[in-house]
Length: 423
Ligand code: HAM
Image 1 (cartoon, protein in one colour):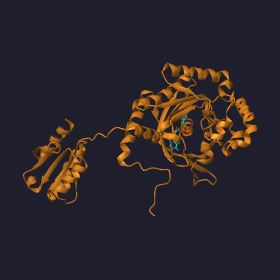
Image 2 (image 1 turned 30 degrees about the vertical axis):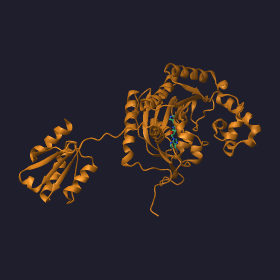
Image 3 (image 1 turned 60 degrees about the horizontal axis):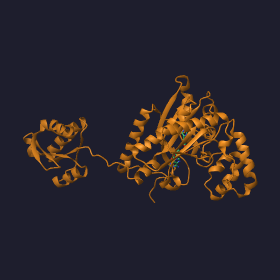
Image 4 (image 1 turned 180 degrees about the vertical axis):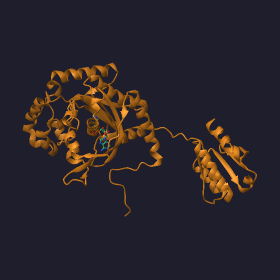
């Protein structure tokens, strides 16, 4: 059997690449408006970065990482990045950005890798657009990253999105809440799913967002996180909600929203697009005030989010919001005869030097088959060069839309086409 692409990956072919350019173009423009600068970090990192950054008990670390030997040192492994936040923080520290600027605003676009069960909207190689703001504890920064993602979706014309926000507390208030959760779930331990059984002592908050129906039923009457926040977390959340309300954001507070990565403190949020079914989270993020320190850096509060680009594309497709590709006018040079072929080749070269899309055929094909090729590339203009015309230093220029033709001197034809195409 012929070799096929790995499970859970996709070939992005020329027929769909315009959609990617479209969303990436808008993302870059919006990021500039919000003052974010682009970074690109390696696609693999030392495994320890993700163990420490994302958390050893998370599903991502326990089940979904692609790790492989570095080939340099025994026992040392690299891992394909499952997300970009840990790498961004590593780059922030390694390049000592904290010593150069008080506030860092970065964005990234790129592939991430998770060994998950593939299904519609869930892939093993997928792309994220994400932003990270490092160096501020102001709740306004949380509101700003939420506004950025919402503006992006709004500008695409996406409707029916829901925004869920929560506070997951901080190292001051979470341990006590954690104990309350353990005390609450311990008597029901046997009824929890296997995943939640193992989460009970390691990470009981994750039980709150288990998708298993029987676990969901067991959470009825569970102590609410909002009643267990310290003053600082409580005030932070209130201020965030104030900004969101002032900006007219229609959000829901979801006390069960616990994100699957360990680094979150205070704010957690998700944007859902329900028609995508079980993979409805198009974007998610939150605050991670302890991560920079966890990775041996100075205390640096931070907040960010990432959006699944395949999920965004699926949502845009569902709502018919992907634009038709606009064809730029192109030129095809039909050459008939050996000398004409060389003349055609140089005409195409000169047109391309002026950034006019131009093609010709190097094969000795009939006029009919060359015109077919011209149609295939949707040529707006065709230049016909035969050996006879060439002897007179002339060529025929045909407008393919209205069929009009004119004879133009070979030496003037590139200028003539340029004025037609570029106006
Ligand atoms: P995350 O929730 O794990 O967060 O991923 C963010 C988004 O990536 C998801 O909402 C989803 O749209 C997309 N995504 C995740 N896994 C897959 C997959 N297997 N296939 C397709 N799309 C997927 C993070 O990664 C955090 N680093 C976000 C963040 C940045 N928090 C703070 N800063």
